[in-house]
Picture (tube, rainbow, N blue to C red):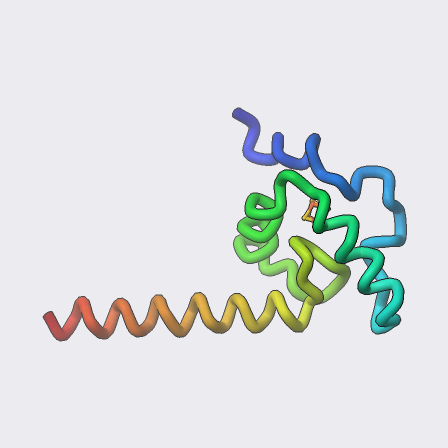
Length: 88
Ligand code: SF4
């Protein structure tokens, strides 16, 4: 399967600027509502993390700042797992 095939099922297809609400809280909530009805949220988040897309827009119900926090937490857990593996 095409690595990006999930995008064909994205609820935000055709949403234009709606997924790029800047700091407008009302527009952020609207974008979140679009994500809430999306069947490919997990694939979208994996792609956002993999491609380091954490500067613009709402993806997988997360703002760029929230995606950065998720990425930091993933990295923290990976470092912890590596330390545990090394200590074992
Ligand atoms: S989770 Fe949100 S940003 Fe990602 S594909 Fe679905 S609707 Fe679009």
